[in-house]
Image: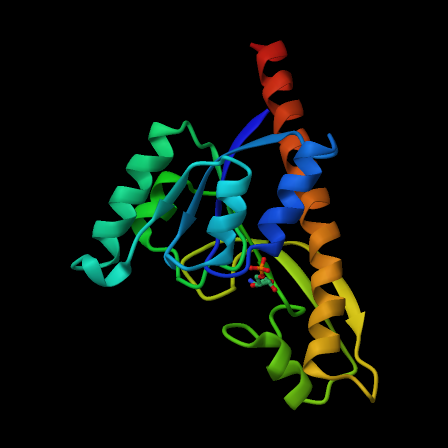
Amino acid sequence: MKNIAVFASGSGSNFQAILDAINNGSLEADIKLIVSDQKNAYAIERAKAAQIPQFVFTAKDYINKEEYEKEIVHELKKYGVEFIVLAGYMRLIGPTLLKEYEGRIVNIHPSLLPAFPGKDAIGQALAARVKVSGVTIHFVDEGMDTGPIIAQQAVSIEDCETRESLQRKIQAVEHKLYPEVLQKLFSASKEEEQWEKSVH
Ligand code: GRF
């Protein structure tokens, strides 16, 4: 069972999808903590309802990113978190967290990266009048939506598409794909650990 933390700044529908997958047994993980930089995020309400501990911080109360990330690392260690899942967390991860959780942080982005990184990927895709966009799950590095890609799924954009309809389609894909990809990652790392044990 992998101990994870979910980082969210917004509505937390991906957090909910992950939680639901854990509860129905399709994802073997335990959400030890939710981390948010927005005290009014609906994701926090969802965590409260599920009795998952929350760490909420306000970035401007700290001198810099290093200071709040040190505190986040402290909380993660306290709860025995092994893996970080970003789900609508609207801040770049800095060196303090990256060093501590190297190769163990993933993110979901609502476009087929490297197209449309950064904010409002859905609006960017509509403005570019592309016919296909989608969802990307990737490892996190120091860049903005730049780490190695783990999985992608395309979503077609129709002529009559609106921001709302495209967002709905993309989120439906996200809610299915994220738990599935996490399960694959966690079971692969479990097999690796077992293999290492057997050869030593
Ligand atoms: C998702 O579309 C995700 O791809 C992006 O932020 C959004 C978060 O939505 N990184 P929610 O808070 O999970 O509903």
